[in-house]
Length: 369
Ligand SMILES: [Zn+2]
Image 1 (cartoon, rainbow, N blue to C red):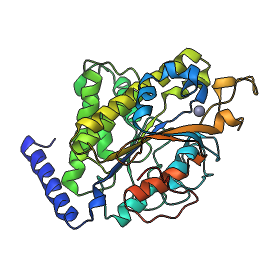
Image 2: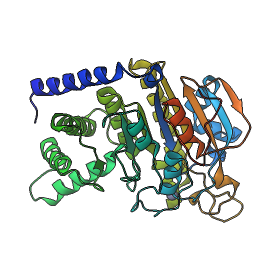
Image 3: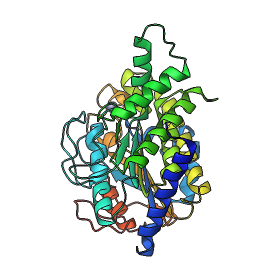
Image 4: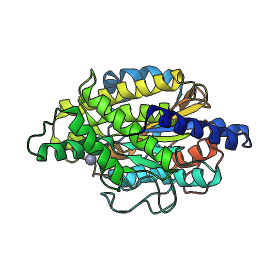
């Protein structure tokens, strides 16, 4: 463990080096971008269709403050990894569905880090989906990826395996988390680019602390998405990255056939997006300079065509593909756009907002500047 003094020194060093690099950068580099996905797939019918608004009270209200794209299409492979990989690369992806391969083309995280000389702590992806360990980069240095739920599951499983150790014992879980984070290999739940020894320790300490606080805090860990939100907020407070992907995923519980659990997960994600937006407005490092893009990763099957209805997302019909995108905050002109846009336009838009030169199949959305 770092002593408090070491911790502060590490934090101080980071701030100093950031100030030094940023002094020479153009003004637009102040912009921050957060991409939030309703991962796992959610239909128009349960969200922005008139009968769906009841499930998303916060987004329904926020819509009037931002720019709403009524027709944002996923024209790629309708699996989770490929859908989000298309969002972060700007090219329709067709790689392994379970995340055993990285995206096939450069992610906007990598382009941002390379071109803007952004540091290792400046791009993060916090994901509920356990197969997203390699979502942060195709080949180079991209986003740090944290899968908080997987980290916690690993630690608790490990403690439970050891005779005489109570899972409820904070110390045991904390020790296991620390050693898992020490190992830091891909797949277990985190892929962090080295940013110097001290900073790396600070990352470990931040994550361990946040996870342990979370499991023993006043709110019980009711869902993976809540944990994802909690860690994303810690990362914002501790490292204030300029580019952040937050992947919520619990609504994919729909595959198990429980419509009520699917609706609950949607409403929980709506609440968490509202809380994330509150953090953006209250956190001085994000306020007034952050663009938040919220969109479903994919839809789900229509009720009429497959007999499965909301359960799956494989029919390829409009209910699976035609979704929406809500842009909030800096540069998101109030209003609505009818023109069809696509998931691959997100990376181009992010690149433009962050001042990164970018070429992809997608086009930057001109209503967001
Ligand atoms: Zn699914």
